[in-house]
Image (tube, rainbow, N blue to C red):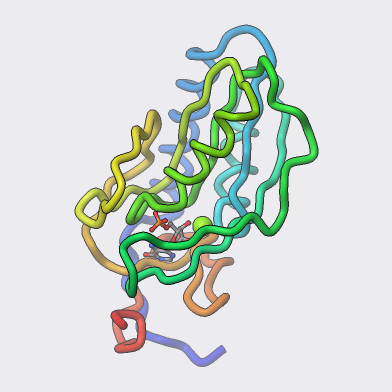
Length: 180
Ligand code: IMP
Ligand code: MG
């Protein structure tokens, strides 16, 4: 890949330290019963694997694929499930694991969808939160870092499917297209 100009916003060390804290917190909050971590593909899979290993109890891991249309063009946004869960959520404590909450459109849709699967409880853990961008209110129980309104990449987050494997969260400084 040609080397774009990257500015590190959150280092790998800070990410890992914060995830360890989050893992311990979630383990304390859910000491008993079945706990399901639902990874929202693809971006959150890096966060999920580190978070799950930072937890002091066993968990079920499952994956959901979502695609969002019309983002930045329409405020309503259209959300489509591209891969559904394999394991039933009935009676379980469920934590949705997301890379970033931006407009909130994806997660408000997902909360509504998963509530119908009759979990015992349903909460959200996100590594990053951009509260300034919110169009739909969503209650986020666990936030790794609040960040300003900048487009970020790395640690799972992509720009046109690239940069997911960077170990830090970075801002892409020299791409005008990102702002579009
Ligand atoms: P929301 O529905 O607007 O909250 O969208 C959340 C999704 O948009 C995330 O799961 C990401 O896939 C994507 N997204 C939002 N902000 C960024 C960013 O700064 N970098 C990369 N992807 C982003
Ligand atoms: Mg995503």
